[in-house]
Structures are given as structure tokens and as C-alpha cells.
Length: 110
Image 1 (cartoon, one colour):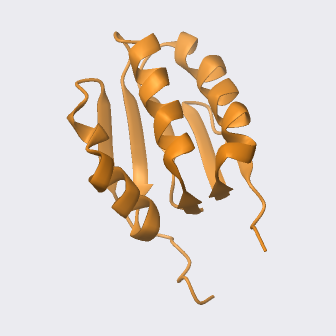
Image 2 (cartoon, helix red, strand yellow; image 1 turned 180 degrees about the vertical axis):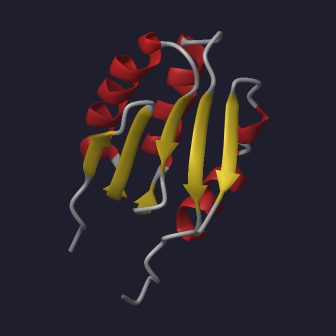
Image 3 (cartoon, one colour; image 1 turned 135 degrees about the vertical axis):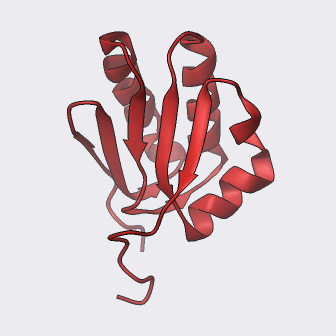
């Protein structure tokens, strides 16, 4: 059973929770389109995100390429999501900043 996917704007970006996959990648891309033109760094709080597949990675890369003068900060990358980010090497993009963090993260077995 897939966990619900949710995006919550937080004033300087958005919070993503649940599981991010091909079925909701368009919604994720739309959140970037709304947040990036505001200016300043766009923070994506990934602490509540339990799962992300390659479609999430592709969406992040596309957003970073579309806004080369804006920084995207992936905050709270952990566990399975962190593995996907590390394997793909997206943190080498100049305007993409990956910050692992587990403060406030619910344990996987909770």
C-alpha cells in the first residue's frame, strides 16, 4: 500500500511527505514552478518523505536546469531518499544543495 503524497507550501518552498513516484511527479513539478519564480533559495523539506523514485530525481534535475540562477535546497534527505539522491549524484549540480537531516523524522517503524 502506498503512503499518501502531500505537498505543503511553507513560505520559502514546500514540504513533501509520503511517497513520491511517477504517479505524483507532475504535482511535484508544479510545486517547483510556483516556488522558483518567488526568488531566493527554494527549500524542499524532505524530512517527512518516505520514498522517492527516479521520477522525483528527474523532476528535481529539470527544476534546477530551468532555474539556473535559483538555488534549490533539499533539506532533510534521509534513509531511502538519501540513497537515491547519492546514487544519482544530483548534488553535483551547482544550484542544487543537499542537506541530510533527521531532526524531527519519524522512525521508519513508527
